[in-house]
Length: 338
Image (cartoon, rainbow, N blue to C red; front, side, top):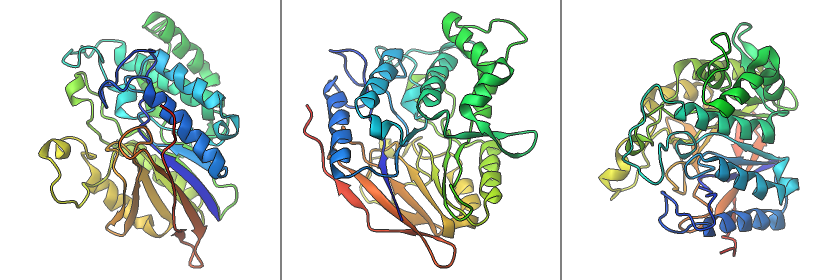
């Protein structure tokens, strides 16, 4: 049996007196709540993994990623068990101070935000997760090894410094970012539990459309190849956007528009082929929901820094029929940090 903590949408800020797009002028109090959530998780007992399904930062700024790294450094036992993936606030907020600002398609801004995110993922989990080898159509090297090869990491570091490629021959951040997903944490044994980390963010150039989500066909097909490589394994499929709208009455129209995965029906139709041995985990709407669509089990994480502030430790166990059993979850109450 395995227990994994599922958090999402922590929306860290980097300014001591800053504000958050997502929850008004809560400023750094939300950062303290995240710290308190980690402390509460340590008190409840170390899980096998801590999965944070996007919106690590509130606007993808460098200071916000530094705040995340500092928080994880204060909890080293959890840091080594944590996996993250990008949310729309990490890569698609054009300007927190002026949400109406338009970003030109040629602007380096989108790629600078994605490279900050990729750098944070490499620092946190680069030695544990693998990327897919497109030529071999199989699971390839670790993220760290892949970035070190063929000058990718050096080219991305140069782009972060100058806002442009060091030369025309250097890989474009678009190529590196796209090829990095899905990230794969392979199962420890043939019948074990693996994790797939997906990027479900559409690229937008306007903050008012930042929440758009879509899963590229090549990314999902690559994820399916990883699943096929371990035919006896079970999988947690993690992404930011929800695959379906929650079946709840009275949801505001504004909350229904452009928030669910645009091609969610197609994604469900593909993943349901493996429904017995996978569970999908996501965030994005800060909604506490556990259900299914087409037999596919879906877990939505609330935000530990907004609203009720709690989160869940989910239990998983192998089924006798080769499937993945979802055990009774443990609710971790809000921390006390303010």
